Image (cartoon, rainbow, N blue to C red):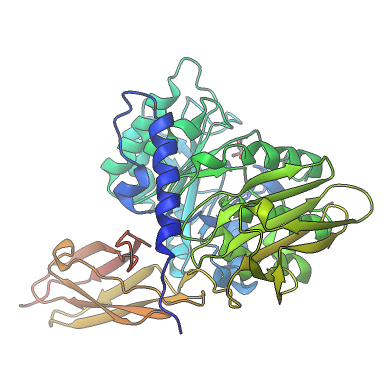
Length: 521
Ligand code: GLA
């Protein structure tokens, strides 16, 4: 077992690129640090599932989302790192006469908090949707304009971990000020939340949104609901690619939810789209019907070798090196172990045979490198000077090249639960325990997490045991002296990368305690 280590020089270069891009592009007077540096979230691109691409609005309800959650777990997607899941625009709330948001109980009978609890109990994170204007895009739901603090508080009470905020019905609103206000409202609500901006490139969010959120849509929608469009997806990939310099840990260009597995796409197209999203360090938000996937689609969405490129902790977005109209070469993505991701996409009709030289990848002409094929899972080499690929129509060769023969997988974190629910029904003091187990599906060790005891209420203690592959958070509750009532704690844990001492993976979960009677001391 290897300790998790990033190659220090590469990381410095990546960090430098991010800092330079930020300094060059920050609109003057924004005056905010990198948002992710404040909350430690989304330091690698968020992974999850959202309903819009396949379902649109109408079929969304609690039953559907719960079925999708179960399919996400059963298919192995959860074990591959997909975590954020929940309704998109699907008429899940309305605004009452008192100005407060209320759940649409006809569609979500357990309430939006109940749905969130179900998702957390399965070890997944809860995603919700709203809009920065007066109404959402379909106009069926209220937007946040004028209610930013109230609505973000409601989302926190529903225990959302991710909020996608659309940009419809915003006439006259200043985009930077609006999303900044929403970020302030999220911070004031006190629950960590991934802020996903959705202005489809309006307002050039790549230039500033890193200060108020974690990811931003760069283009128009990838498809109309239910209608995967390959040509449009490719236009989006090539547009998003041009923004590579703006991405980095905690700040992601979002070319939209994926269309992998939607009707009309071939297996090669599924593989290609997924590979492109991975080399671009894009959020990997699946958009297909997870209840009806064939084996090949599951194989694409759960390919850990490809996911490891996307989730690489250096967070560099790959870019096009050259494009002859049929064949394009994508590279410029150094990875944490000193290897490099390379992709050859063929958009012609027959088959392309190409030789890729190490030099055109920015590597030494005389290098002797091993090549790992991330789809056939074969390693070959060492190869002197370059490597030949043969690629069919709409397909890719997706590779890692390295001086070393081993190709470690970056950390991929999977929790058994993000909710500990405990109950005490006696007046006698009790000690109750509940555990959260987090497993690293990658091949390298993860640094230990720690919880600041001062951040916890007096009735709760947390100890972290285990090591690099699996760590257990043991939550010990003492009910002595507690009065009857409901208690809640948000447990936050952090860890740091050993070489750079930079934060790696902020982790948090909820502990609920129900005390049925007053308890003696
Ligand atoms: C916009 C977004 C989509 C989806 C719809 C919902 O078009 O870009 O992803 O959220 O709104 O109406």
